[in-house]
Amino acid sequence: MGVQERIADIEKEMSRTQINKATERHLGLLKAQLAKLRAQLVEEASKGGDGGPQFDVARTGDARVCLFGFPSVGKSSLLCKLTDKQSEIGDYDFTTLTAVPGILQVNGVDIQLLDLPGILQGASTGYGKGKQVLAVVRSCDLIVYVINAAKADVEIETLTNELHSFGIRVNDTPPMVEITPMVRGGVTIDCVVPQTHLDIEMMKSLATANRFRSGHIRITEDVTIDRFIDAFNIKNLRYIPAMFVYNKVDTLTIEEIDRLARLPKSVVTSVIYDLGLDSIKQKIFNELNICRVYTKPPGDKPDFGKAVLLRKGQTVRDLCNAIHKDLVDNFKGAVVWGRSCKRPGQIVGLSHVLEDEDVACIKTGK
Image 1 (cartoon, rainbow, N blue to C red):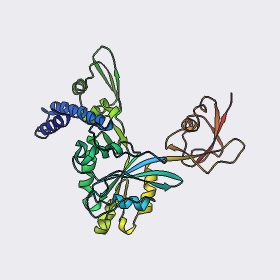
Image 2: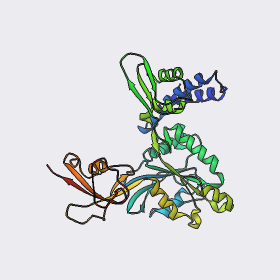
Image 3: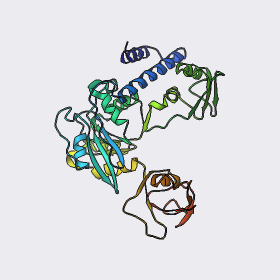
Image 4: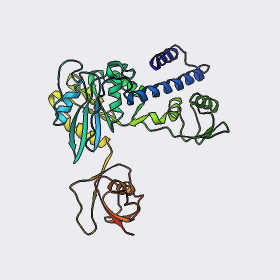
């Protein structure tokens, strides 16, 4: 029996099992088996294991963003409006048959924007070459859901389920579960915070189902069963931020448009009427959490021609590593101007967290 058939059997058994106290352990073990099998599918797809054509394209620019959604929701039209790239547009499904790249320029940053073929329910199992599309999504820094506004809730739920089945966690963070294998001694579990979803025995059963029979598990969150299982499969998971573009809002009422516009990480648009395009560009930039830092040579003016691109929350150490690998070893201090400082020209160390559009002068010496 193949991996996909085993997945289907487990999903069928889970769907016909009543959820109650008596069955929660059985369902938990089924979920653990399902996670392992799905991880196996992801590994096969990443190696091109199904023999199908690959949709990936060479990575260019400072960040990679994909337009992700069902067929005929306006992804190709949006790519054409946001970039200088022409992608075939048609009033029929599956106009786009491969990944089409374009460059979106925002605030001095070049963002590679990928128009991906539309996917259907079952994409994570390979339906409609969905595994190739999802493999490209895993390589992106941001997922832009392009949604038919009239079908928003159904489309978002289906797309997110397909991503989840392919090891992509959207707008989430890795579980705060530290797993340390040992040669002997059995499984010990240390819960730093009270647990309301799982007891110790259930955790040990799930650990055994994941072939973890000896070692220490330290938990620093009130972990759910799904996140606990994810902790054992973390190397096969990708945590990617996402935003939502609701297209074709010209077919909705003002009240419905207002509701969608107020949702988190969302932009409403009508591509055919060029509505909301500037908002989409800025939202993409903001959701990438890009931090532009300009360098200043000692005794010279800052170089505002090209910024060093970091992520928000990164430090002077990260800046040094981005410029040259030897800077940290020879670091003697940094002078920083900008929003991260209490005063202009503040002297800081390697752990100083930088903000967007800071100016930094790195001092080195033997």
